[in-house]
Image 1 (cartoon, rainbow, N blue to C red):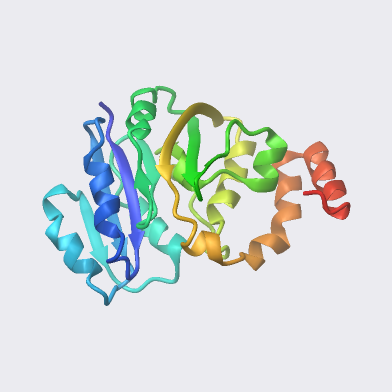
Image 2 (cartoon, rainbow, N blue to C red):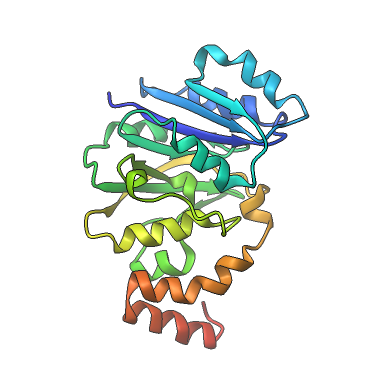
Length: 229
């Protein structure tokens, strides 16, 4: 099976990292390459990484400027045709492997569902829903070729993945495929669930117009003015 690089970025994640790794080890898909980029943790995270070295493809620890700086570092070490980003406090479900076995179009970004706060999100999304809300990054498996063209804009500290997906939506060589699986338990207490990305919010309208076109942008603008989202 084509290898899937699973990227985990960590900073003081000792309380959750082992459970995250164990959820990967339980997968039926046989070719998963774990890449961990640690931000110079001080709480025992590195000890957990070292205890799992026989199952980790690559790791490093050094200071970084945030989640997406670490993800960009990880992308230099990916192997295989597919890339997946998993939070250190998230856990994979068995459906991850079911989706992985269905990957066949390396021009496609595959996305599925996550479970968070006891609710399944997000289902198949329309272009407007993608532009407005984005896709949980834990729901997406990317073809590696995406990262030959794009990287994460570290200007956006919390939702740079949304900005990247917007670029991919506009790219005529890339398309999105939805599969009805629940692949991950997303822990909403991480950075993406607790902090607003003010830089992204400031640029969002412009990014929607640039990448989704006039019709989606006008709908977004009208509904924002009406306070309906």
